[in-house]
Length: 249
Ligand code: 13P
Image: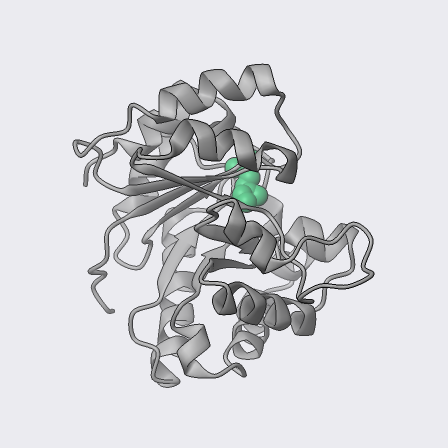
């Protein structure tokens, strides 16, 4: 088991939620994040709110990012948003290959790889999601499925891969209110880390996502290979998100 060394990272994924009015309350609260918080923090907001996030959060300890990126640089691609555009909004992070994009937009492992390259070439950190469905979990295929997703990322050059972050998000735990068992998540994280190390990438940060809440976050963060969380629902509640970020262990 390899001991984690990096600062914990707590990222919020707002998904398709928000309004200028509601965001203002959340973003104002996130401005209060100071050095007493035991982590780095950020929020990945819908595209229309990137400018608002940048206005509220500039010069704060909380960074911001997007939830998707085009793998193309520019051109007649209606609806797509390039890495260069995200960079202009000061994005530090972009979520890539979230299961909701794989499911509802047919994103493949190859698309995910191209998006990782697009992010890194624009100095944006790709937060790459991997995870198994309930069916795969119940038929004991989790390790195999996740290994395949991770190996696909590792086909990229290690100079690119080493700039990425991985988020393990069991699909059955997302939005269900039933998180993975922390011991089970640790087992998966440890396997992911070993695959990366086997390919010479030693310092990969691995987040857990799926029904993280203030009352269960400690148990995940206490695990040696869990470096933080990608938080959905609880990131829309200022008090809950700050409570998760302020956990010490
Ligand atoms: P929930 O925290 O709402 O389960 O969502 C997790 C997630 O999908 C983060 O990307």
